Image (cartoon, helix red, strand yellow):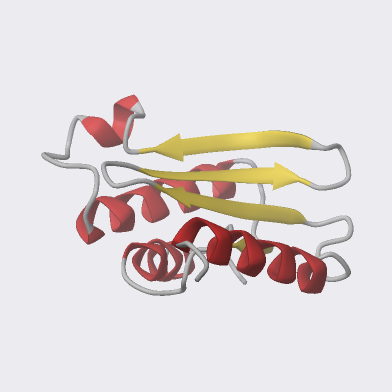
Length: 120
């Protein structure tokens, strides 16, 4: 029986393999979640560097949250990352959910980012 961490690693490698051709020269929206926090960063594939990063620990997000591990926190992180990306003139990204299922907080973050101007 495989652990949930092993299953996530399989999903992550399968997703990265399928995404590698689609993300050439594009920006990638990476999402990571823990029990208590949500993290999102926009990564430049061509330069190999992080362009911007937002999490529930960021100053602009943390001040308006009571708890960072729920859907409302993920929605706020998605909104802020989309706004910061628009400021840097980034509109098209490839969504990388890092092996997490597209459900719950990951889905809330993605939907919020789409509603606020990111295209993926």
